[in-house]
Amino acid sequence: GGRLMATKKPEAGEALKQVTYLASALKAPRITEAAARLADHARDAGWTHEEYLAAVLDREVAARNASGAQLRIRAAGFSPGRRPMLLPRGQVLWAALPPQMP
Image (cartoon, rainbow, N blue to C red; front, side, top):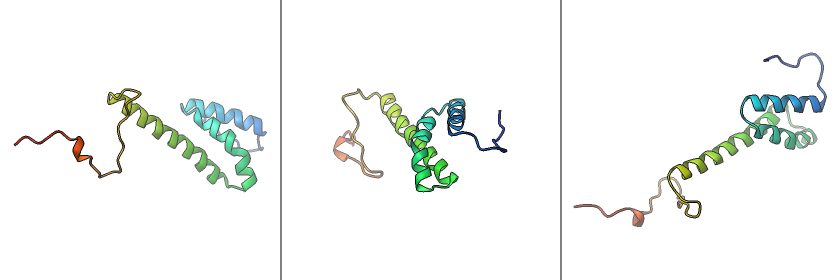
């Protein structure tokens, strides 16, 4: 369950197995990929545990945001070949709006 690894430092392989299990339990499989990909880089760069965790979670959040945007576009009824034009927030493409009724 929810116990912490307190007494001895786990082997890297065992730690990765635990990350895989926990990411699966959280329904966040991309965490496993990001953790494995970033581990060596983090070690070599001397990242703190917090910096490493933030980088792994950042990858998960970015992937979820991108996935959510794609789901919303699909739910809006756009066909795969016809995507909406994305404008910066606050800008309106006035020519695309229907004419006003008097």
